[in-house]
Image (cartoon, rainbow, N blue to C red):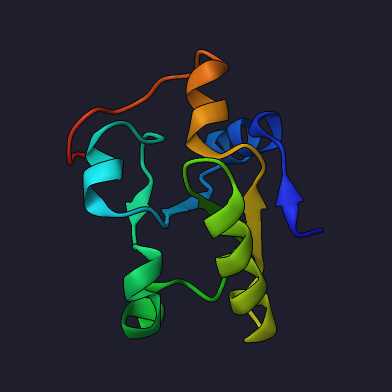
Length: 104
């Protein structure tokens, strides 16, 4: 399974999921999933060592395209990673809590 729904992400967050937002900083501050850690796709190669290897990673972007690309790359290197289908746009559209600004 390389993609999960917004509902699956919401359930995983309740259980303490590690959410990684792969958008650029200006996109992140415009609205993101509470608790999401910002690791822009453009910085992933340099920051991959910051990602935990002992639990699943839930990757999210604006619509699901970039996060799916990152998921594919991370899975090829042994990470338990999944992309969130529909991305932050779907999260916001679902009416779930969203953080505006740099705070997680």
